[in-house]
Image (tube, rainbow, N blue to C red; front, top):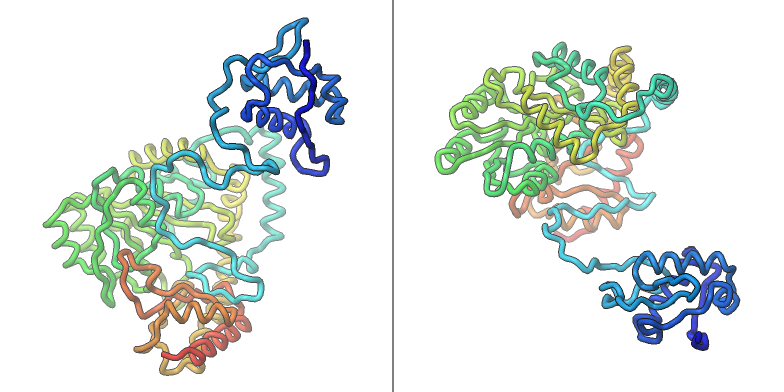
Length: 492
């Protein structure tokens, strides 16, 4: 005989959660509270629908879900009953009301979080000095849009939207190999290229292949924090060496190699990140010789090779690598828009084959349509032409920014104008704390990252990296004025 149905069930008809799921959770709560005990009979679907004010199909859907989860059992010609063997989930706390997931997982997260600042978008009226990004407003969006629509149609007709080579689209790998061979003297073919979703993914893949728990990886004392965290995620221990006006201190590196086994070193020799210093040719050759002598790999992050103003850029380390020591990582995203996420790894064949296997475990492959579009734009010279046009704008902004710093902050800051790159490394006068200034500046609606954020080990840094390319001349002038006001309003 069916028990009288007096259990309170309240459904929210205006809520976002489906009504049948609200009924599911309500019945689970009744079972957990022991108001419905194992073996207890439930009303028929039509009867329960009339009680709670829903149609019979909604109740059937809820019952079916509860039966599949093990809360209820259905017996032909008899009815629906609370299961005699309830799932273990019955012991967990109630689901938060309103259908929201729990705020904290009820399981252990095995790894500590990356040591990176939490990113939140700045208010709309804040002028932001980033770490050296291009201005996406200069991207030839109309040209890219037409090329993308055309490539999508061709790919669909030729059935090329399926899974493909994890190394990336052949056309783009060929275009990248041609560019590297012609412009950077890197003797490579498409088989030496693995496409990735931006240079950060390239660094992560390289870290996975080069380091395991306990291995030593070397970075400069000031460097790129996401690279550090990629190697740490692979289990590496980070050792640091110093910098001077010519870049990496190779005497310190050699002394370190004599004390302990170094597995790899991460460097940005073209424009050292964050200080913008260029590693000179003799140091580059010496670094390659040390890699051969001590058996470590070099991860060369050439994140802004195309952005140069005064002269042709220096050739990459990998162009002089005779031993197969260098893994070269670059990006095409910055030539169009950082959000496109197109980067590449150039390395010996064996490394690229393993990198492709790692890609299979991360995201399988990139977007073949976007890769085909970028290949076509590279082959047509569109990207090169667009970059040259953007560089004229960046050269103007570089000068506007340098002049504004000298005029507005004379005596408060100093800097060396580098030959290339989209950022300046600005040193503050004695007594100015960049970390404190960054907090005050945010109130003035201008933001920048203090130099201490780039320290691989905690230490004060009386400088900051100011990217200038993503702000137009008027925005740059206004941002420097706001920065000047923040300095004047702060008592040092």
